[in-house]
Image (cartoon, rainbow, N blue to C red):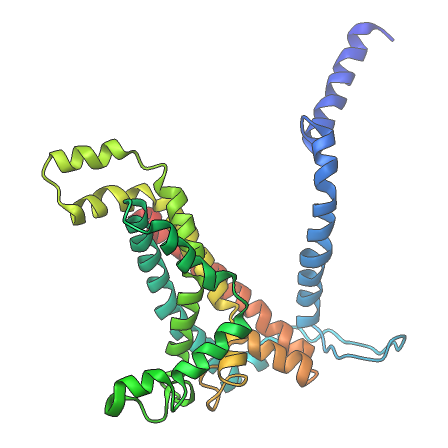
Length: 307
């Protein structure tokens, strides 16, 4: 075989190899364990859940093989006509309407203030970030003391305190949970904005100030456009995290009370799939939740980019 024929084949082999393994195969080899982890912990369960959603699936004893027939969209039809499922999606809608705007606005404003070099900035950063690091069980205990019928908040409000109280009130349970989650996760989103603010040139602020722009105008016309990419990230993360709400209603309202006013889709998946042994309907709820979250995330991304 001539050298001229061998060289194109060698080049083709190298191109194919670099396409699969990159320029540094050793680096891809180091990343392989994480790829296996993702496939085993995320990809396989997701694919299996999709399969379950289209079958009459139920748990059996190990080693017992029972037919699980294909039922098409029957599970989805049952879920979409279930009042409890529809209420769970309405509840999470209320949560997102409160939580997402508060998260974006507060984290951006507080990060801007911290970036401006206020006094005790390091102490404030720690104070904002500590709730995010603290276990939810500990913080839930504090909030139960604050917002119980005889808690500190009601004592301060006196006759203005709601009756029934916050977490046992059908109209206030989910908004209260939304405020709790906003407060707990705020430190993480503040750090994201602080990192983004480092890339906004100070010269732009100085030029705007020279032109007579006040603090609000500089914030609106310089800071907000400068951190737009981070705002998209915060929006998407807040939507995904909020839609997967489970721990907070489970602990704060004893599993979705009062009368289902704080039930969320993920909490309902747990109740249907684990407690009531109906994994097929639970998987259908999960698929609907994935679709809803994907649509909301794409819409938030597009709206923010168009602005």
